[in-house]
Image (cartoon, rainbow, N blue to C red):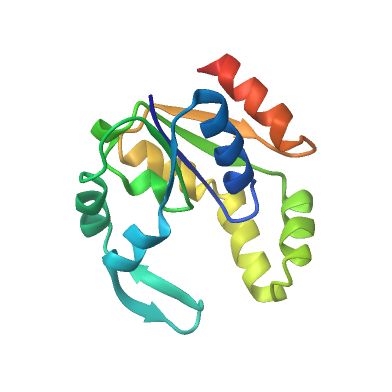
Length: 153
């Protein structure tokens, strides 16, 4: 099985992906090297890299076998290359708490809360024709989330 896990930062992607890959006994792929090779610039205002989604998708095509890959840009991977795209979501108050714990500045937190409220990752996953499973991680442990996601799969 090939699964992409996406969502706004703070929704629980990393922990859920780690546990899910262990349960499914598949590789956990780190998307960061793929993003690094797909980088075409840097947005100083947002303090984030600018990624060429086409290059990202081509980098991803090189990966073979079954896996779980996670990252807030995982939904840009071509839908033909994964069985499911799991979109993790979290309510605004919980997301703010999680991002505050990370030490993020208020402006960056509010930008991400707005993206979550607008369901940006989900909308982009749908636009990219993914077979989506949407899951709300609010007030759930990563273990509870994985158990319920496995039931959905």
